[in-house]
Length: 78
Image (cartoon, rainbow, N blue to C red; front, side, top):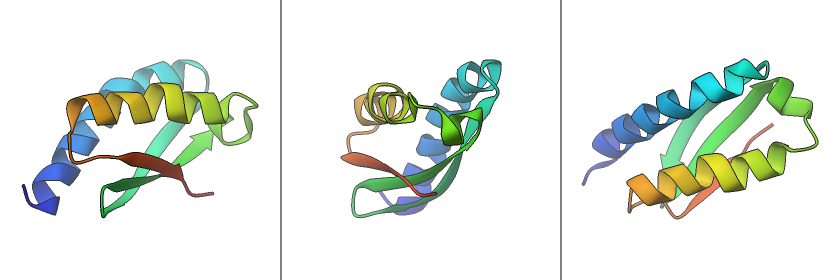
């Protein structure tokens, strides 16, 4: 599958997750997809939250890996 299609699917998954983050005053922004890695930026309340790494790994990364086999890791870029 080509990157544009993968990026579209990544955004679809992030759009499902985003309302939960927004309920707590935060959000996530998709930056790019390279070599199986999704680069995002946690924004708003998520940016400084002590639970940000858990949100990233247990929420965002798990959802993306489960729904998109090409995704192997998610990295937060500050």
